[in-house]
Length: 122
View 1: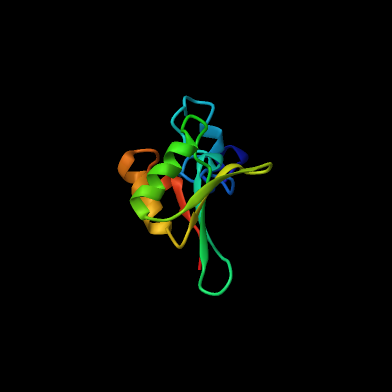
View 2 (view 1 turned 45 degrees about the horizontal axis):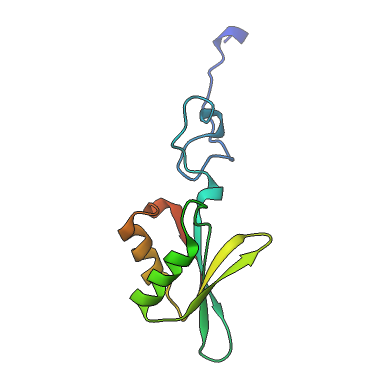
């Protein structure tokens, strides 16, 4: 074998995007590529005893968080508030473990796709 017969092996990109596309593909018309900053994170936090708190973070600026909170409260029969965090922006807090309800509701009304949701918790 000579130097001219080198076979190019395609290696996996360790910095590949969640949607399965490489970062090098972003410059070539990848307008619909899901970035990790567009993920909607749904977390549950333990308060005291059996009490839990559900937080929803990462909903885009084009959506009114107060109206979404009102819909969540009415549909899930729970209380909640919108917190303005310096690091995470506006975060919706709901009483109780509402992770499955929130994720189904966001998919149902079309705010996000299933691959944009990231559900955390125990």
